[in-house]
Image (tube, rainbow, N blue to C red):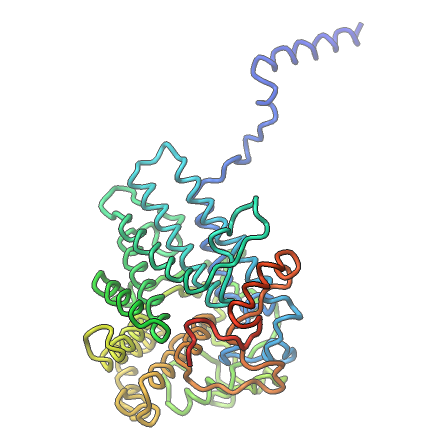
Length: 478
């Protein structure tokens, strides 16, 4: 009798449940079936920032390549070994899978959202696209030709590689479209707190997009001056960064898992893998640079750097400063100092009117102030014949003067230092001790791409002149 009763209860329950719908019982009410666009956007920003900020040798070795830091026990990465840890593979995968895919998904979700106004949707899509432009710009500047037009399509696992210059020109066109689409004069205009750079401030994004346009425009300075001048002039006319308050900063938190990856790599790990490179330390010592105290620790009452490519005793050399090891230290995407250096160069090239020395002075001053120095420190520093624009580098060319100071100002931004060193060719760097190759001017294509998309990656390698770390990209003419 009990069995019959139990069966009756089960049948009755099933009958009632069917009225609601069997599929409804399979819905996990605590898990979203559609990820909100704001979450996708925030995750992509975070992934991109982590990639730029990290010093994990599996992920980001740009500080080592440009000789801002060097290693202590392990020296492979300081000697430009890109293969042992599959560094190109990780970089490529992170930007496509964790960054670009999420930005693209955010745009798709926004486009189909019927609850948002057309103005808010336009702003959100434009800002996500600006971030896509930033990420693709990094990929092109790392590899050369990369998947673009056929990228981010799950149905096509073997996308073709597009010409690097063609991609960069399209990125400039996309920025123009995005800038035109942005409207700061609407309520609740953007992502709000899900935007870690500007908190949804559309006016700030317009200025960021113009400054990024200036930066990409200057990439063409040696290879296509007409394209460079047209875009630089348009960006400056529309309005680029004018102070440190414009800086695009990803601000980390003090508690895990939201700290800067540098803290994880340098402090939480308990490891002592990195010291300052003698290349940057010797340069700063020779210039009495006031930023040394913000960049590095002291050893024996001064600043001393290790030999690149050699195993260095951690306690014998300056290491990353307490500022760098702070879990909340911000990662810089784009800043005012960089903007002023670009403008100084643009004046020298005749792209815009103005005085190169003024922009140079503004750039150096902005960097010193950003790191914690005083205006007087900047004035004293710039007054030295070895730093003053007219006499710096023994009265060298504008590329030498700007290149040296930009190399110093972009500290802790290894990728951007690498790009500017390749573009300006200054300062002159010597290969690390026992280097496996010349200092890389590009990354070789990922091994996974060679195995799974061999035909397209092979064609791309042939098109750029060979899949070598010594193959210069289209803009790297000298």
